[in-house]
Length: 451
Image 1: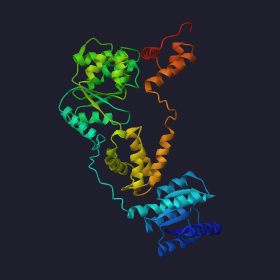
Image 2: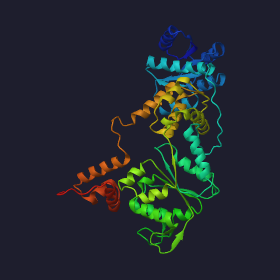
Image 3: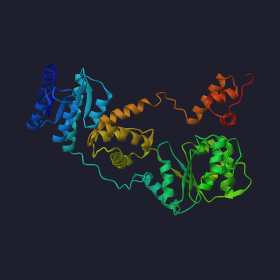
Image 4: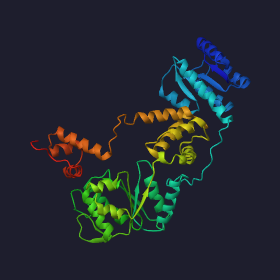
């Protein structure tokens, strides 16, 4: 157990806390003022300080600054009866380990002291410092030493030297766009633009204009001629994110471009050419969709010149050991944390999780845990808390719908509510009538007889 200093001008709190923690095996001292506290800091050298935010001779925040100056490694738990946001923010900014409100929950305080005690034990323990992976700061770096990732690295190297169309398949959060950017960045055309089209967010008419451009007066609001992505990309790359969401009309036009490398702006008559490379990605089973006439088989054939299949993180857990130090290094740089070690049980929790959100979820969990650990060691308690919060946002039903099925059910529900009034349903869904009719056709939704 550690040396514990209690600084609080309320005698009953001093005595009760001193008695409680002494019985738990801590060596305890107490002070009522900042002057007494600083004197004890020099003589007693406590590992943990419980500090009231209001003292007779000074502010507890001033005391906190003095404590951190005298002993940077000392963990300070600030307590207060005043629940104001500014003081809490300032205390945490000045380096408080935690901030608890009065009346104190003794169990919560004990757990907080245990966590504060735990950090130096870990720093002196057998856990080695994290390796410093090579990181040039590029957001498009892939990490992993599994067989699957080594194959992907080789594929990127081969594809970077060609202009072949690429289809990247994998679950959400596996890093499909990072792979696309790595292909572009390692190609001879890396100085050319890399442009993204998110097929799941744009309406049909907007997407056509984004891709091919439009002439002035082509439609209401087209006050100027606009160059599309195919022109703007020049000899660079265009990344179609979630290409499985591409509307049928756009599928046909993209197919035409891939076959002839020619296109026409919306409202235009002049035939234009583009040398832009097409890289597409999807988390949907395009082969199954093509078999059900939900995606054009001929377009799938054109996109599948080369396919990269990215495995989910649960199928390559050996990569977690490489991903953790790499991600933490970036978190340290971007958020000014200083995590250099990972508690053994924390790494065990990371290895045991199934990671339905894949690498993206791992990054989110590590970010939250690094902030919650408030020190140089990534704590198992912080990982548990972050995983618990993450799991509460996931569906508890055993039936998990695909995005397409969820969209179909939602559209059907709105149509039923509006008694199959397509205009009213489109307004309720926030889309145009043509877009809604396109989605209805995609999902095979037809007006029931008598409705």
